[in-house]
Image (cartoon, rainbow, N blue to C red; front, side):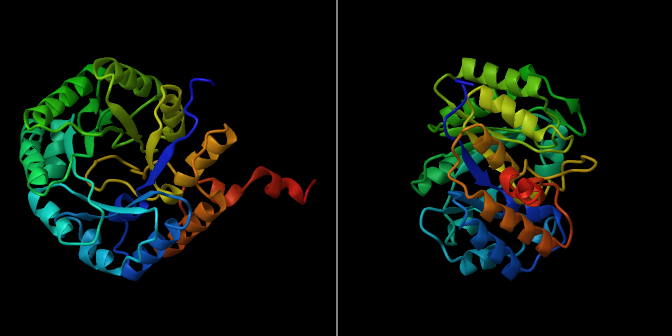
Length: 316
């Protein structure tokens, strides 16, 4: 237990990755959830995506969300883009910019999601870095998608993932910018504690000064187990989604689910004495609000079970 981090950062993905796979949600309801999340202690909320609205109509109101935000102190309100045009749209809004690059270990998944091969996707990231520099923006994140598996190509080996990340970081270096944080992303929930530990260990051995984070999905029920594996390897940054909301519409995974559940991950950390700075009760309220907004149950557990002492108090 002494090897675990004393504190972790949990960043919220629900309003962006969660709503991208649901029916179209009214902008006002999205803003309602974002503001509720901003009152839970979260320091970063991913609010929307600047992507092709024909392919992802759920994200067609990105500019309207930016215009409607009431920003609370201490909270970063970020957005995602995958292209130069998306970045320029984000640049014209009030969102806090988090410049990033991405690659995909599965070339098939890259074709489905970005319309190009995995190698071409990596090559394009050099232009994105140059564009960020033109606007005096440092590179913040790099995302290694499908780091553990792909619905189209099957299991991804540690060696495959490492080779793809090597190529991406080489492009970053060639353009004079290395990311502050590299996200190892289990895009379709294919990871296991063993594969998560293996990739983190290999990546840290290869790049000992680089900070790594995990973006995990719970498609096959191993999300929190994989988070535990990350914690034991010293990972202290995780993406999560309120209530377990969401899933990538282009992943090809049957039964695709969202990121690991924000409040359940926070509960696990709290029970182990790992600080998160998050208000569990307010997170549970947000999870129930998300269920109300989309009109269906979400897979998170804490929002129903509550705290142990409170749940059993009447019976005691």
